[in-house]
Length: 74
Image (tube, rainbow, N blue to C red; front, top):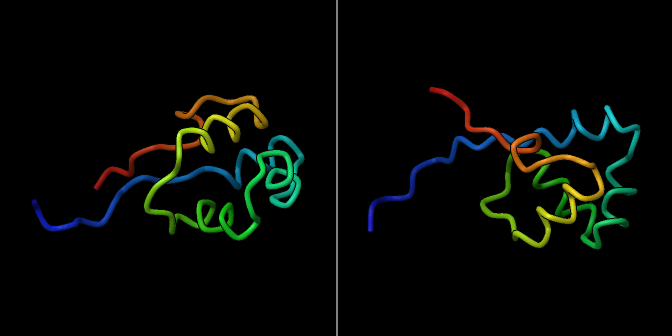
């Protein structure tokens, strides 16, 4: 197995929340996850996300996964 490399996935949750006029705590309630877990995602510290969580976030923010996530160019 190759050594673990730093991921380059960026999360644009803060921008989407601002555009929708929604708070992180409101999204957490709607999605059914903790504010702490969403904060980890929002601050690019997450190592993984469940498809069910991604689906719920996209449903509540009326977006596609590509609106929420991108890969940073190096």
